[in-house]
Image (tube, rainbow, N blue to C red; front, top):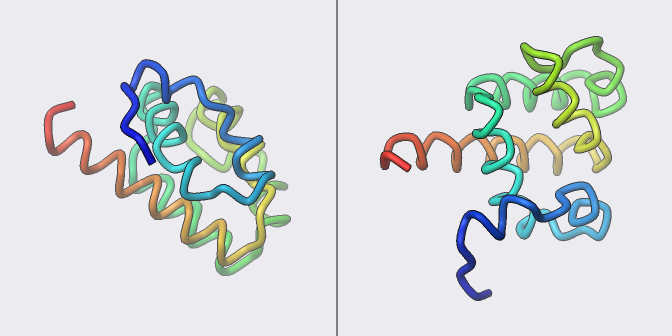
Length: 105
């Protein structure tokens, strides 16, 4: 994997990557896109727990799985992979956002 600047990675199609089973490749662009919308890592961690307990279909059926309409619009298409894999992936996205914020990026 070669390093790419955030400006290029931010525009990667997260849904296409997830659909192709490339969850690892989808982590960074998802974190960048979510961070740009002000998604809090704890919101993604909470959503991951909802997915674990109720399943992806249940989470997808929530009126607003994240606090704002813009954040919900971002994550709703992400809810396409199986339950446990999605929950782990959401936790990874949350960890990347938190690490970026702690490092001052």
